[in-house]
Length: 134
Image 1 (cartoon, rainbow, N blue to C red):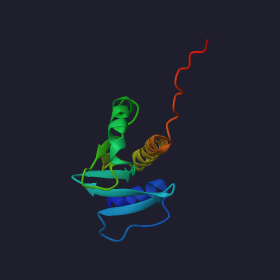
Image 2 (image 1 turned 120 degrees about the vertical axis):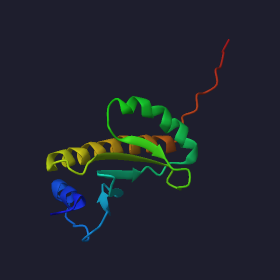
Image 3 (image 1 turned 180 degrees about the vertical axis):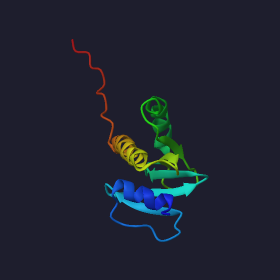
């Protein structure tokens, strides 16, 4: 019987296969790395957002609204240089369609969050001082 990781890779049509007995695997998706692993009866996906530490509060302020729209969760690891990351899970027993939906929704979430991180890196337009003319 194929492992949950093998079933996930097959469900999404990923061109590579995981080594036999692997409990984790890294996928190259849209120029970034999505980590796939199994733990406690679930299949997890995560992707680092590579944001600056000073941007974490701004990202966190967006999280409550996004939690209403998506299942991916924003988290942070203070010991990591990547700062924030997204993660999402599905039970190992999920069928291929549920795994495919997980992957698609997770990638959509990553796109949205990565765009916010890029926006934070752009300089903020300075508002010119008010000038009163006679």
